[in-house]
Image (tube, rainbow, N blue to C red; front, side, top):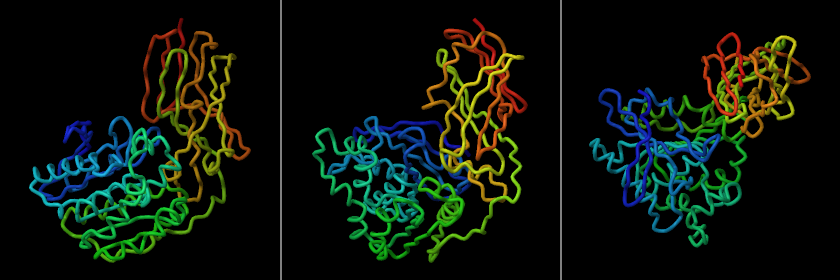
Length: 408
């Protein structure tokens, strides 16, 4: 069953935004999901869709407190945000008639840090943390300075060291009878600073499992969790049924991949989203040449072509990073499609006020590794809308072609 729409609950003066999914049949377990930073904003809900068939009740808690992400913390001591969120989780457990031993805290990256912090600090039995920051204060101070200021307060008067060392401190002194599953990878640039120096702290736990994710298809921090999701789902299903896997520390295995011996270069095009803001046309989607890698920014470029008979307008497009495309477009060979995502500069649209009224067929020019191909823009999911702003616009896109009509 899919997740519900967002709901809001106020606990001890703190507004908590959350979503949920009921258990299947008679499963007696609660999974609480903490999320990392979103791809396009600070906020997201991780594992949405992936947990539709999880046997347990599931609650997703949004890391949005006082308008910003905050690692599910206020940074102060006592931590009024964390205390309120823990009270919220405990109330859900009470409503379901469950104990903390029948609950799993799950999170990735920032969410993994939160899962560890809550699990260790508030004595939850089961924790699954993928690529967490074990020293989050140091991390956000360097990479998310605005979040750093938000957590510590306007005068940065709260103790950054206390916040930074909270996970390590709790791991050193909390109850050791826990099932902890930590997923990481040496390919992660955060591994040497955020994971490796502190692994000995976790050796005291009765069931600590350390999994290294290894694959040629995993090359960055934000690719590790999505690749390891089948393993995470297996752990959740076992825990939901009352079994805590033990002794699974080690490295994931995968077959060795080679680049394709022949590259077809066939265009792969799928318009995923489109809209207008005044005279600015905002569109984005998949654009790749089969068999040609676009792992680096310099590997690929795009141009939008609007064509009506002999009239043609060519407009440069931008590109974005979508690591999931390498797995989505995988066909057995080692090809990286990480940058195979066309979009408009800064996602702010392209000005087409100079294009005369009329109906134009939409094409895209793809340059990848010195190869140029032009292809009709298509959409696997039909897109149609008609709006009136400064001028009128109508877009039609389906699995065969796309067109835009401009009318004054």
